[in-house]
Image 1 (cartoon, rainbow, N blue to C red):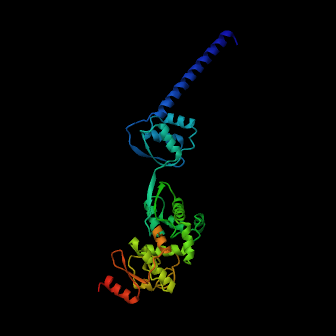
Image 2 (cartoon, rainbow, N blue to C red):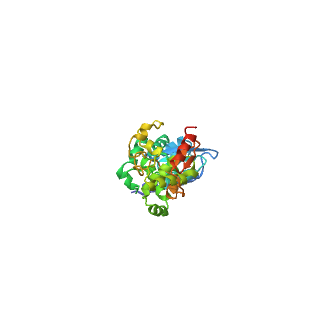
Image 3 (cartoon, rainbow, N blue to C red):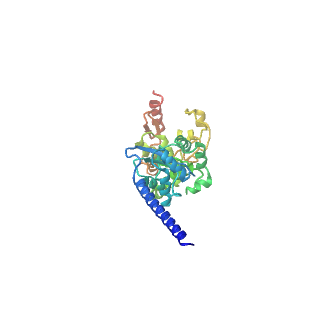
Length: 339
């Protein structure tokens, strides 16, 4: 190569190198300024969603569209530099343009998503819980009930029963928007196991009951009273009747065994034999009739000492307890028949 041409080549190469170096320096400064500067310091919180499978390009574009960042291209470059492109997690997030892009990216990669409250009251059965889950927008009631009776799935919960009725612990839970029935049920069943002290299992054995039988009894106690203070006394009545070989004669058990119950319990219901009709069968029904809370389980394990064998509703959420049939009949006339 002739010297003039070589000189021209070197000059051009050097010029290009300087331009590239200068351009890189400018880009680095732009990125640094961008990641540290909120696009709107006065902005309020808003919900931003990343859907499963969305690309970095789409996420960046949506962030810019929602005015959470000022430059989608710089956000993409910064995300790739950080090695975070594949770490962005699907879900709903509470973000604000008052946060820097650096903070926004950290939130999106940690998966710190918006959580939705799901409150399960004490004493609901799996159908009623399934309806709450569906209403909350998580998954269908049908799918929820099906999973609660699915053997292979139940095995995942480490609960060795044919149904999860009785084992979905009533409490307030928080789940991301796209949570499945699978996730929700596992969380409730795990919480049940956490909330039961090992000493209670020992207590069940002392009573001559299995844990499953305790949960069945607790579910009946839960459904029988609207006054939490009565639970240990209600429990004593059922324990006393079981010891004497008497039928439990609990209306809530009858209702549980009625398909499409319309809200009115009739004599024909009491006379119809089902695995849950404790007017017709001796001992406990076939399984839990609801999902009891901790206090009801505690009452089933630790009944107060009493000689009561009967109780009748006073129609004010409390009951009148009796030791004999004669006393009970008088209470029925007074509180139910108003005589």
